[in-house]
Length: 171
Image (cartoon, rainbow, N blue to C red; front, side, top):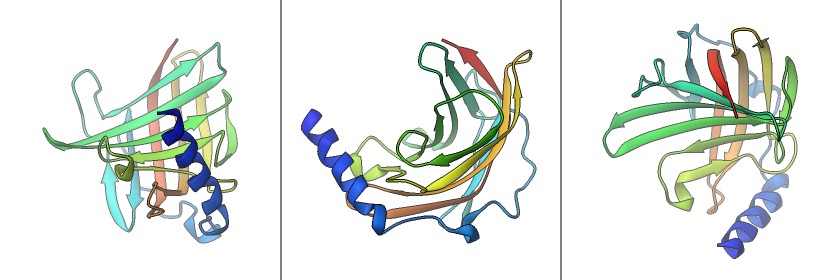
């Protein structure tokens, strides 16, 4: 398992020069989305999280106090066998702009196989902007965009990303 992870990391890092974001991938036509939800355009197709059991709106967040990280995830369920998850991992709490790459990550997953898992690689693979970080009500909002690759070096382009008033839990 460690060997697979190392190989995946090497492949992702080596793809740095091949894939990167540019200013044309920044959110431009972001659509208003309901609270506790996430939306984006993935390879030109609109994507929005759907309500799942215990998660109205399909998005949730976890703030890990001991690690200083927060993870925002949106889930879209098309059927019992088709589930898509879009995740933003950030290494700090609060408002601001974060470059996505290795420490701060953007991830898109459509299954459990390695070729169904795309992650940001290298540096400057995208941007996440936290616009609301409400510590009283424990909600976070923002925008994001990124390019991600899988182990086969297939790319996914995620643009116009929005997470809206997503409630977090502390761990």
